[in-house]
Image (cartoon, rainbow, N blue to C red):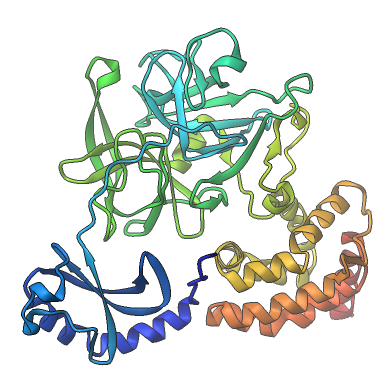
Length: 487
């Protein structure tokens, strides 16, 4: 039997927790007096290992005892202050190592250098600014066997067995640049195989991190912000917060004969509540992602005694290595879970990136006063829109059901193919229907600021889209508005 979906919208959970908050301190005080109880929290009710869609007081005990072994006054009540209880023993577990082979390639998986036996993590993907080819991003000490030179270093996934046949050893990339002893960085990039037209046709990558999702480019880290990580050792999404934005650190590299490297101006991350460590051995090379799925830090070390992790600023990595972290916000649904084919990329061609296409469209529309105003609104709310489309169930469902990814793809093609018209409808859905549906769901799910902007401007956006079926016709309409304003 399929498990029941226990999803509860966040706004409903906030209201439900307010009711618990009224009595939580009293309930905790009473329950903690009972023998064997070590913690009291709030969470989802669990029956025979299956979560239920209701909140309760979660009571953790050292060991579960049958009622017959307890005095009546020592038993945990089934309800307290009108709310159900749920009793669980202290959990114990063991470390998980993800050494699986992943195709298409994806962030957060195990990789190994051809020159050493230790494994680290493939953080994410970027384009090399010189030729738009795709590179993987990780640490120098993960993908290079020598602290001084990258000559001949190659990367395998999940391992590299040192043979000459890339089919046998899982070789996926050649290291092409990096910094280790200089630049206050421990970072390297490797050029993915399969980017020439005569290579294996099924080599693919997916610009996501396992358990985290689509990456939306990079952003500057902010002290105190919450970050997420998925490494080859943690094998689950880990949560932490930036605890120091400027700390000197000395790191010992056992794989380089215990070489100690001192760095200044590094970033420190502390584990969030519920996590002992943010990252552990083997997670080196993992990318730290903020709540908008933007890459902000690259993990390279940890002090497991004090439970702190250390990282480089991802935007410094980008600038130093002349790369750009991929933003797949607008085109991921087009590529699908099968991944983007690498052999479709050549030095003279840019990767099919709808985010870049939107930037091109923005550059054209901002020639006109109304176009500039609307694009400024989009930029102001861009991070929240990305977050809603990627994480909010109702918004995500509406965006995909009403053909949002497909319409963006057609707009991109229209720009590249000399104003080729966008279809009147896709699978029975018009562009106007998409706008109306998204207006409704964003009004319900967006922040007050976003909701107001949508309410105040959706008719203006509708007028632009109704003026034609191509960017050229939309620009002509905006030019008319300017002429009227200047008359």
